[in-house]
Length: 506
View 1: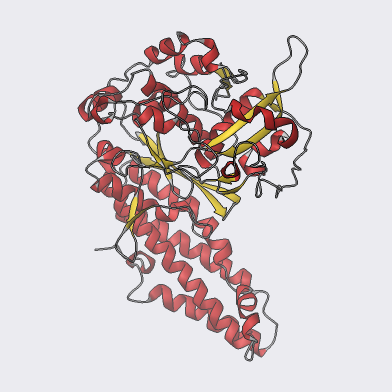
View 2 (view 1 turned 135 degrees about the vertical axis):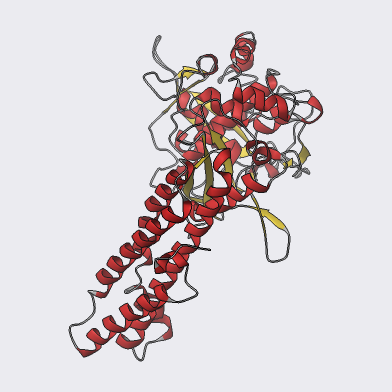
């Protein structure tokens, strides 16, 4: 039985222990946000496979309000055959494909390839982890990294020859959550988190639990041709699908020493055809310019908190899915703080290269749903307006200091005076404080006034620091005066958010 790391005083508990102690554990400890999401998804898959899930939306509300115990899940897992949950079984390794065994000696690499954040194009590693990096992975770390690959693995080509199993073995497909924001509702304990994210299975059908590539009641895809995406058989199938055909090799160890992984091999995995009505419970959809909805996606230039209003709007307006259920939920301990957190996670990638994880924690209480919508929307509008003012001020300074620039030099020259780079990271904490005050019941108009004035003060300081690089001559003094005047004019503009002018929004 694989182990996972958890928060608190203990670590590397087995899956049975995690589920058995779910009411006492406050968190799961994972190296990255994506790893945390992948582990939560896997635990949800186990709950569904065990038949422990609410039968209806009303039952779900009762489960959360009554803190329905998950002991039956731990008991079900304890009764499972040990061979079915063996990470290194020679024929049916958990979450893996023993079909790759003949290729391991020739094409296997160091365990660094298993870690998504170390992978460039599955041939090189952008953080200097070489393919033959000697450091081994513990069995627990390898298990979590494997789950992350299944869920978030990037498209591209693997380092596996197609001569043995087929040319399509090398064509990697993007994981189920690659390219969109996944929202996990976090409660006070691991048990709360699992209950909040469980949901009624369509027609009561939980589907298959994907234990390995070689144990299933349906044929797995081959590698000679690219198959069409398969329809999931239910939530147990969805949350445990094998997005990669992967194989881990245990390193020889002396008796009593912990098992480690010294070689891995990664090939193409399963392709899914997702049902938008059934398989994307948590997705926050936004309409594109062409009118078609698209799930909220990770952006390399836009932090997640700037789109918090999209999450709160979904919780206010959605009729079905996760957000539809949350709106009318009565928490047993709802009081002066958030009843739960909306944890939003996404992987930013440049084609086949993993760049960074982006995530955000957004407090939520059903009783403050409308207020949170107002605060997040106005807060985002205020920040956007201040940032626009900084950009315009930088342009004014640039025009004076560089009267005859080369077009190719403009971006770098203007960036010299653009304080948005400092402003956006600094604006996140005040925004989080705004949400915390709102979820506690503080009046939104007053909180927004304080928030707007803090952002304006920070922006003014950042702009002054940027303008300090101006030359100490007439052009420099004129550029400073014009830039600061431009910024103050924008903050006082009648079209600016009222809070920046010291007024409340009507």
